[in-house]
Length: 95
Image (cartoon, rainbow, N blue to C red; front, side):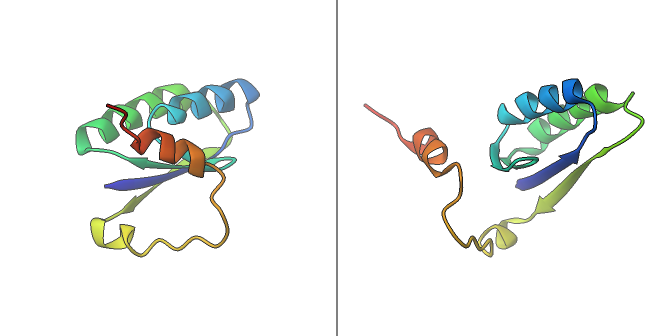
């Protein structure tokens, strides 16, 4: 399943840690928006890590949007995604 995760965090320290955490799970598609293709088990692990990182923040939020498989095929992009090269590198297997 694809998860779109967006955040609005005021603390520079927490925002930086959150971005680095999310980079380990998916692809940044906008400054504070990530697309992550995860199993349910990996999503639960990510959710727990995000919660622990942000639970003491008094301002800001993290939002998780779930996209089902049929919705994945309906994603439309106008223009060139910023991280196309990164996505391509991850999909290339050299033997």
